[in-house]
Image (cartoon, rainbow over all chains, first blue to last red; front, side):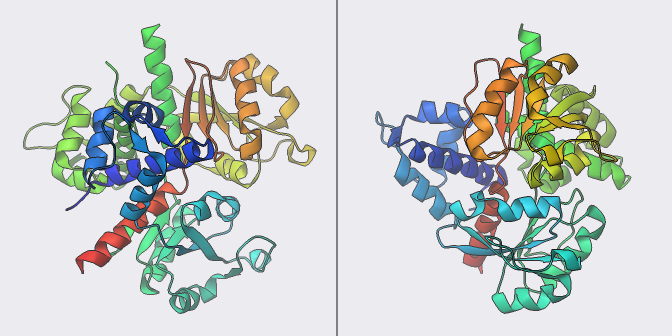
Length: 209
Length: 209
C-alpha cells in the first residue's frame, strides 16, 4: 500500500508532539485534544492512523508511549540511521549542532566541506572531512542518507556524487530542484513555508475581526 | 470557512513547485503531472484547490502563472511583510542569508541578539540590534511576524516579549513547544521531519524489493 507523503509528514508532526507530551509526563490524550494540538481535524488524524491499524481505545484516547513507538515503527526510525551533511556554511553548522536529529533516531556521522578552514574535529561535533574524500567515505561507512546544505549552484553536482557513492535518500536545503535517478528519494526543506502559514493566519484573522 | 493547516502547508509546496516551473519556462501543467511533482494524489490536489474556486481548465491543466498568483492571493503574501529574526547563532545566520524569504514575499527587516559581538551592520544583511532594544524596535516598526532562533531554554521568554510588543505570528525553530495567548499563531519548524520521510521511503523501498 502506498501511503501519501503528506500522511508521512503528519506522522512526524504527531511524533514530535508525542515527545513533548512525554516530557510533560502525559500518559494518555484524547483524540480531539491531540488533533487540536497538532493542528489537524480529528477525522484527518483518525484517517492517518487508520493506515496502520488500531491505536486508540474508545473513551480513553491514545496511550502516548504506545502511539509514539507505533509511529517510530511505521517510519522505520527505531534503529539509529547514519547521516552525512554536505556543506558546513551557516546552515550546515546549525544542522551539526542541532540536537533534534539524535532524539529522532538519526546520527550525523560525518560532514564534508570544500574549504580547508572548516576541516577537522571540534568538540561535540562529528568530524568534518574535505569534500574530495566524500565518495570514498560514504561508501566505506555505508551511509544511505545525506543532507545537502551547499549553495543552489553546487547542489546538483553534489547530489550526483552522493548517488554514485550509494546514497539513496537526500534531504535538500538548497533552494533548487534536484534531479535524481529512480530509487533515490529527495525531500526538500522549504524554510519559507512556515512564514506562509503564518501570513495566512494573520490574513484570515484580520478578516474575521 | 476554516481551512485546515495541512492544506495551507500544501499550498506552500504547490507554490514552490510553481516557482520552479516558471523558472523552467513551463506555462501550463496537467493536474496529474503537477500532483506527481508535488507528491500528493491528484484527488488531494483538486480538493485543496477547490477550497478557493476554479483553477484548472478541463483538458488543458493549470496555467502556471495564474495558479501561482491565486495561491499568493490565498496566502496573503502578495504585499511584502516585514519579519524580525531573534537569535543570530548559526541557524539565525543561515536564515539571515537565506534568499528564499524575499522571493516569497517576506523582508527580514531586523535581527536581534544578546551578544555584543553580533551587533552591527554587515553588507547584504539586515541590521542586528541588541536584544534589549527588541520590544521598542518591533513596536516602532509595526512588525507582526518574528522568527525565534534562540536556544530552547530562552525561547518562551523571547516569545512572551515578542507578543507583548505586538507580534502576532511566530516561526519557532527552537526545539520546544511555545505557549502563546489566543490570537497569536505559532508555526514550529521541525528539521528532523524531512529525515523521517526519507527513512520511511528507504524502509518501504527495502520491503518491496
